[in-house]
Amino acid sequence: MPASQPDAPIILIYGDDAQAITEAVAKLEASAAADAALGDLNLSRFDLEDRNTSEDQIQGAIYALPFLAAQRLVILRNPFARFKTAEACQRLIGLLEEMPPTTRVVLVILDKPQGSKGWEIMDDKRRGKPLLDWARKAGSRVLIRELRLPRPHEMTDWILRRAKQEGGQFTPRAAAELAALTGNETGIAAQEIRKLLTYVDYQRPVDVEDVQEVAASGGQADVFKMVDAIALGETRTALRHLKILLEEEDPARLFGMVIRQYRLLILIREALEHGITAPAEIAQRLKLHAFAAENLTRQAQRLNLTKLESAYRLILTTDQMIKSGQADFETALQTLVVQLSTPQPAP
Image 1: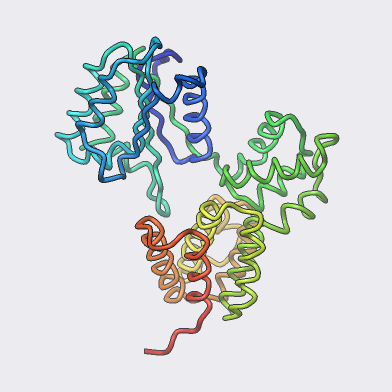
Image 2 (image 1 turned 90 degrees about the vertical axis):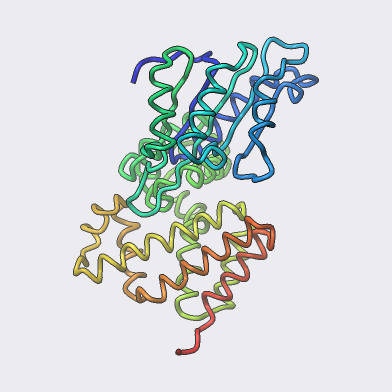
């Protein structure tokens, strides 16, 4: 990919690492809002999954002059939710080509792969590919940032680097232990790193015992316990685990952890149905840490595919309820746990 200028007027950020993307956008916003009195006046944010946002509003923000500043910043999240067709994508490109030099535009495209199908957005010949091809040809006018999740086997090094950035240290064995608990979910890992560094007061490296005492008692590990209770039909136990998790985790992030758990269980159950039973082979196929693959395989062996698929449909319904405003995350999660753990009557 050709080198681009960091001060380019257009920034295209895409990938599946939500944590890295969020941090990259936050840095740009902080830079634009350096003057606390004027920052928000020269910063426009749009999430184009909001159907109330029109192309005229977007164009107005891009073409508006900055107020008592040299430049204004316009952030467009999920642009393909509004610019859905090939023609619409060309209109977006036209806006970017004609925008005034006093505007800086950030396009934020967060890909959400399902199973092994990743990066379909930027491969889409109607939208992603034309935009990416145009950005590559634009040279120094466009900064392209591709932010992918680390592969599971890269997470140990990622944790070691992240701890150093946070002003602390992990031993390599502790980093590997945490990687086994979090997988390649960088947002969860970042949260656990901060919690563990605070636990040792940044005075010494985090060791394996710290991870087992602090991180293993929450996060993805307790999601595993909660799903175990759900599978056994123990609603009260599952709700107790949920309550503990909600004390430590952001509900939105926790919901993402539940989705990840069931998605992996479905993939592993399908592997078991096809005669792939060795956790080591499953770990290799799904790019999981061996420790996580062994635990998930053991759990998947107790669940049948029909029930897992039914559970995933309930999770989808819960997601729709949250996005439509019918329920908040905490209430929706409690309802979901009750639904999943209540035995369904035989047809």
